[in-house]
Figure 1 (cartoon, each protein chain N blue to C red):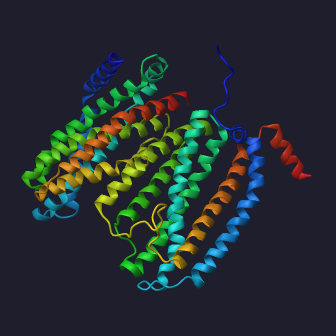
Figure 2: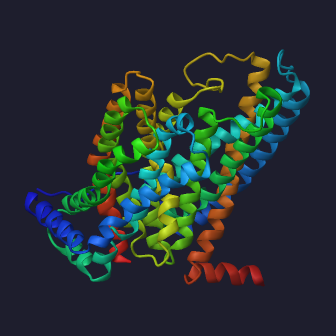
Figure 3: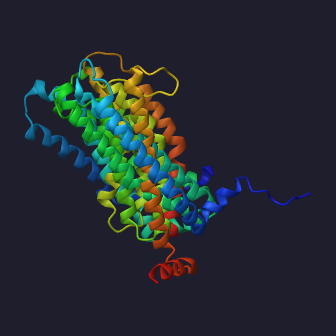
Length: 223
Length: 255
């Protein structure tokens, strides 16, 4: 069971590494969307610093969302997914490995680059560790929840917009607690409660989401 | 020592699972629910609009509660109904349960929409604006989004069987999420009054205001049952159109 997890994770990371362009796209998207806000709203420093927690979290969420479309696509099209579902290996572990690989290739890079963008948006310095920490806890949950929708729509031709429709309502709690934590940190308020709830959401999705992903994959493959 | 496997569920459950039986049973139930819905809704409306006392602060404008609260309650109950019947459809592979889930989605979405619209109309005189980013309004809006997601997934899938299984998974995920969304939004912002109806506590409203509301809520439930049964019977006929009994039924009506 553990072996299939590592094998699947290794395969996905290797594939991602071989296509470095795809690896960069969500990051570039994140940077560009964040750039739009000073241009579209106002470049004033005090205004931006107030806006920064929300903008950074919403942009990170959208970047994670955008990359979901390709999560199972390649494996579905070349038949790998069908073989994985037919094999006697645990689909739970396969689903978990897929979601983890997605996080390592999108959520983690987003988290790493976020402090740079935070500086560009004049986020108060004391809030940056909280921003990184909240993204570090929140983005894996985004990957896990998003993978469910990705698995549901993998067999469909018009998956793109549909995924967003399915996923955005489910992402709202993560966004609320993530952005609130950063908002609290800018005002030097205690943030452990927010981070603890984010952690609880992550724990819940870590346990339950792979079941939903595996069930959805089985439906999509059997179609 | 193996004995014959006893069915876990009562007999009527399995009978309802057969589209033909279900069509006949719901045909008998339909007039009952329809007449109950008409009677209760008319009684409720007349009572609520003409005889219930005015609110001492909000005057007559509070009377919209008699539509707002039942539709909000229904929007939530219908989502639960949809998710649970979807789960029954997945677990026991029951076609009728899939159809129930399918018929629930648009009714639930319209109830959520009605709750939002009446909330907006009520908000204007009470809070001074059509829309407020208040916790309960927002979570109702998110519930509407969840309904839209389910409906979009239905329409994107071609085969009804896979559509039913996929949307059942999605609505179950949504069902797990609803309490999380509710509490997260509650924490985030609150302006709305606390729940009007709780099963365990004495209502805060005087009994003259509260009773017509109860009548309206029950009336709305009966209306939902009526609408759901009508859509379900249609759906059964469409999906089972190749079976002998549907052909016989349709040709008998023709003559």
